[in-house]
Image (cartoon, rainbow, N blue to C red):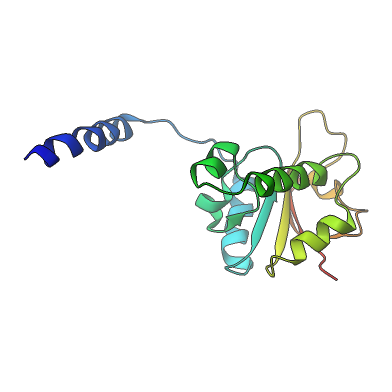
Length: 155
């Protein structure tokens, strides 16, 4: 009885708040199409890189992220140097300098297909499919006007 009284209140409180939470994530039809393609059109062991700390792919596309969030990484006790290296690689992919051959070599070491997702921003002058159009390390795989997915060329 003592163990039950100590262990039950916290999960009950979490359940109470989860059941009352009516918030929803706004997902456009285009984005929904991307997640459907991810779930049906990519290998089960595929890994995705998204800008910022977006973590929708594991839930909506049923695939892994290369980088999720700082909190998530720390909760699972990942190596601090690996966390920093992954965040830096993710940030570099979306920076002006872009993905490098060294980044591709690091991703190749995963032994899994890797994809990059780009979402068009309100101030972009180009559509999402044009963002990495001239990046030799990436190959376009799926696109809508506002969201596009590229596969990292591992050769």
